[in-house]
Image 1 (cartoon, helix red, strand yellow):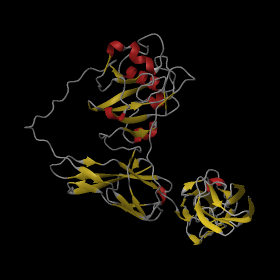
Image 2: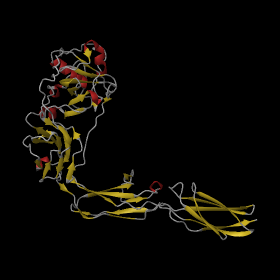
Image 3: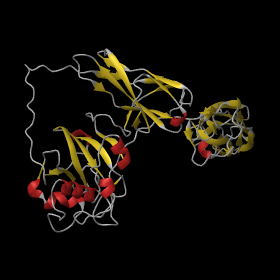
Image 4: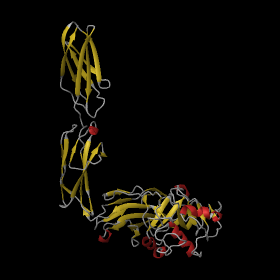
Length: 475
């Protein structure tokens, strides 16, 4: 995401992480929270969490843009109009009563605000203050970043609204531990607030719930079916659970049950949920968001399996014959795998085995897909380990009444070759283990010409070789 600045042609980026899931299974375990647009109350988070995105979506979800979406065509404090963190921050200060004149002269980049206004910049977050990130500070880019503080949850967590150059409008929760905490807070118009005293031990404090296991959703995400969710695991077990369902981040407010009918109007929308724990005497707890997945029109079912043929040997070609599907217009795609990992560029119906494949198992993933349908994905059984033919080289000589045989075994894509070689010199015979793909024997022999025969005995990757013959003249 690119945050705002005053000067064109320069951008600063702020990294984010998005959680996603591969949905559309008949039994889905929700492994982690997501961060879609929501109209729910802002809750403390474990890091930095986007609460909504876009002027319209944020306003619809109850997160105001203070009118900036309709007024962002104007330049405030000589900042560039539109999606721009500096223009938005200036707009909020003007809305708070300041004149449309920048309080300093010099650069308007976000990174400079806290420097020019150092006399009113400190480390105390207040509602109405401007959160300021300096150059390359805590994930900001070279032009820094600005945001407006909407809420102070605690000394270590704030809720901000922000716009960004080349990006869009957001509300966001930021904790000090997230590594995204601002460099400082600029107090143009806000006033310090008196902190709420920490309750003494004598004051009653409501106990809280702890969520110890994620909810589970049962059923495929297909139109005209109903999915059901469990509440997950809690400590203690709450007296009541309620469910909050969302479609593309917008709450389906008429449903607080664990069951969600997937009606036609939900086709293509991303479903997520939160679980609420309630009990008298306890603080009501609302879980993080959990992604469920996109709603599809149906499922592509196979009517005949795909098959793979070919010999798993270096240089040979493996081929796939696609199966059939109940959706005649389903398209078929392929991805070849080496020991389970995708092979770059290997997406055709055929694959020629290369040196990199020797000693590995090669399989292929076949996908039958149709827009707005759950795809059918199958991985054909992997081949045995790909083999490479042995190349055996024999050299002989005689020295001081000894016959000497030197054998080298090589195989493309497999270095060095391991295993044993059977060596025969005249009537002498022995199996000798290769070392670095080589073996050398010296055998005392009577004078005369002796026949020499060698054969590599093979391994799981390099098969047994044909016999290689020669002679040696012992003198």
